[in-house]
Image (cartoon, rainbow, N blue to C red; front, side):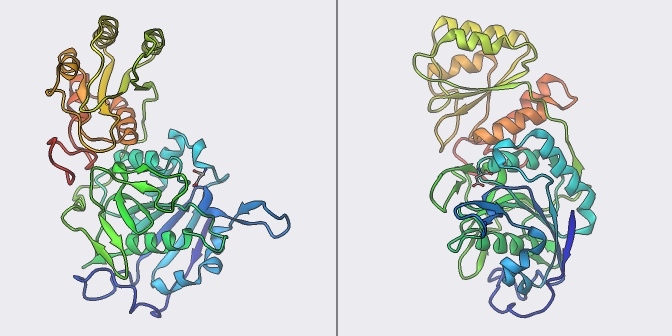
Amino acid sequence: VTTVLYCGGRRGMIKSGISALDKEPVHMGTTILLIYTGGTIGMMADQQHAGVLKNVDFARIEREIPGLRNLGCRLEVRTFDPVIDSSNITPENWAELALMIRDAYDSYDGFVILHGTDTMAYTASALSFMLENLAKPVILTGSQIPIGVLRTDGKENLITAVEIAAARRDTVPLVPEVCVYFESALLRGNRTTKYSVEQLHAFESPNCPPLASAGIDITYNHSVIRPPARKQLEIHTGLNRHIALITLHPGMDTSVLTAVLAAEKLKGVVLRTYGAGNAPMDETFRQLIAEAVSRGIIFLNITQCSRGSVNMRLYETGTFLDSLGVVSGHDMTTEAAVAKMMHLLAADIPDSRKKTLLQRSLRGELSEEPSASCPD
Ligand code: ASP
């Protein structure tokens, strides 16, 4: 379903500054595609049934948020049919989003995706890999309180996400990346993780500073934002689901690990290790990993700590993984590691190349030097 909302008019432009560096409002005359997938942001109280929430009709979103008209940009709305709680998101939905963006790419200046918060960080990570050579903003947002509830955080999140998606200087978009905007912070999508179930500050980007922060003005952190790609947008909808995410814990039952590694089509494992990328050195564990590596299974080592990076050269409990051929995921989030593994395992390139690329920054998802944070 596509609906066109014409949000013309210059009223309100004085206060909606983009950054101190910008001479004039740079979102005038832009066209933004708003894609509503589902989630809390799209809910409102049902007047007929007390305590029940129902879906908002985003085609009429200007009724809920009249302020959107003052942004001076044109909004078109598309809605997933049916809308989904983000816990039900699948790689097919990611492919649907990537295809929607590709097909609409030349007709819009930016994209805003309204998404449930539960898996928003996975979707943002996956889209960052699926959309290669991105030169336009793709901003995901949602809310903790439904948009139809008085104290909602959804209105501010939505308005600012649209404003950021429309922000340009000399016709060049200010943020040509896949991002998450939430509670005043614009975060690189593949660096985010859902941090709180209850607070309005629901997302963090532990190893990468915000790309922008919204206060009275929106202040952009230009040194962190990646430049727009010069090449043509290329999309990769293929994702290999034959991966496992394994979190180590003391006393782990190796028969469970054996069963997982024996899965018939298994191709890759994201291993959530301790601290700087360490794991138990007992012989059974070592042999299980060695045997799986010899069968061509690719292991990617990320840390259970939310801040800091894997460094397998620090301890014997890390070097043995390195010597077995486990590759470092540096400071990637779990969400980015899972999405990147699915993306690279689907690529038609040799395994050795996949291992190399897993350890390199493709879309700013990791800091290659252990001490560096962002902006790779
Ligand atoms: N369960 C909801 C979802 O992720 C939660 C939310 O939107 O905050 O779709």
